Image (cartoon, rainbow, N blue to C red):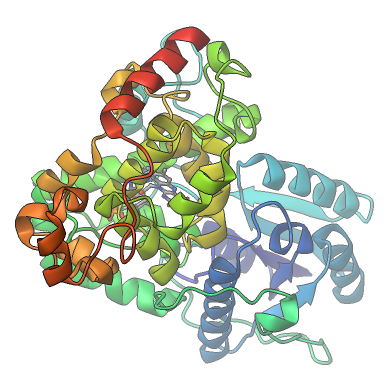
Length: 466
Ligand SMILES: Cc1cc2nc3c(=O)[nH]c(=O)nc-3n(C[C@H](O)[C@H](O)[C@H](O)COP(=O)(O)OP(=O)(O)OC[C@H]3O[C@@H](n4cnc5c(N)ncnc54)[C@H](O)[C@@H]3O)c2cc1C
C-alpha cells in the first residue's frame, strides 16, 4: 500500500518522525505539500514569509529528488486535494507532524474526517518541538502552565526521543502522477518582499546551525541581547518552517552557559506552543481575563503608521522597524523595545502590532508572535506588572547598542549625528543638526510622543483596566 507524507511546517528530511514512520510501514511513500489559500491569503498573509516558504519547497524538492523521489504539489483545500490523491493512488495512511495552533487543529480535523470517509487514516507524529508532546508538561495539580519559569523546570525533565537519521534513498513516485510546480510569489497574488531576506531551505538552515554551534553558541549567554550581527543564531525562520528540527538542535547543544541559555530560548518556543494549544482563544483575546476588553487602546492610525514605517523619532524603535522591512527579521531585543513602544508609549492595541509583524516576519509564527506580543503588552503569560515592561528606548539603546552601529545601519539619516546626540537626536542644537545633515522635523522626525509622559499614561491605563 501507499502512504502520503503531508508536509506542512516540517520541510526537511532529517529528524522527521512522520517520514520515518511512513517509510517503515509502506513501500510507496508520496511526499505532498498543499498550498492553502486560507493561509496564503488569510488574516496573516505575508509576501516575505511566503517567498521564504517557496524557497523551502524548492529546496525540499531538490533534496527529495537527490534520493529518488520528488515533492508533489497541490493548490487548494487539503481536505479535497489529499482526498483526491488518496483515491488516485490508493493510499491507506497519511502521515503528518502534529501541530497545535487553532487553525491547524481545525484544518486537521476536517482532513481527518474527509480521509476517514475513504477508510484512510491520518497518523500524527512528533517533530514540531523539542519535546514530543507540547501539551504534556503539567503543574502538580495537573493543569497546563500559564507562566514560563515553572514550565521550563518541568520541560527540562521531559523525556527526549533519540534523533532520527535522514533516509539515504526514497521510493520513486508512482508513474503518471502529476507533480505540480512550485509557483512564483506573484502568481499567488503576493508582491511584497523584504529587501534583504535570508534564503529559505534546509540546506542554508543546516549550514547556519553548524556555523552557530561552532563559532557562536559559547558566547550566546553574554551576546544574545547585543544588537550586533551574529549575536543570535537567526535560525527562527528555519525553525518556524521546520527546515531543521528543534529536537535535533537541542540534541547538538553541549554543556556550558551559552548552550544552556540557547536551550532556554528553545523552551520559550515550546512554551508558546503549549500556551496556544491549551488556550486557543489567545489568538484573539488576552490570556489574562482581567484585561479582556478592558484596556482603552488608542486608535491613532497616524501614530501606528509612524511606528510601522520607522518614523517615531526614537532611533532604536525606528531602526528596529526598518530592520523588519529590510530583512523580514528583527532582533529579539529590538522586538521587545518596538513592542513596548507600540503598546505602552503609544497605547495601541497589541493586536495591531501582532498583525504588522505577521505581515513582514519570515519567522512569523502564530504561537510565538501572539505569545510574545501578549507578554510585552503585559496581558499574557508575564507574571510581572506592566511597569516592569515599559522599556525606555533611550536606555535600551545605551545598554544594547552602545556605539550606535545598529541604529546607524538601519536609519541612514542619523549616520552623521555625533555619538552624544544619537540616542536623543532632538536634543541636538540647531547648528549641530545642520552640520550633521540631520535637521529634526525635516530629515528625521521629532519624537511623536514624550516617553516620560507616555509612561505615566500607560500606568494609568493599566490601573484603570485591572
Ligand atoms: C513582540 C515579539 C514578537 C515575536 N514574534 C515571533 C515570531 O513570530 N516568531 C518567532 O519565531 N519568534 C518570535 N519572537 C521571539 C524572538 O524574538 C525570535 O524567536 C528571535 O528573535 C529569533 O531570532 P534568532 O533565531 O536569532 O533567536 P535565537 O536567540 O538564536 O534563539 C533560538 C531560537 O529560539 C526560539 N526563540 C528565541 N526567543 C524566543 C522567544 N522569546 N519566544 C519564542 N521562541 C523564541 C526561536 O525559535 C529562535 O530561533 C517574538 C518576540 C517578540 C518580543
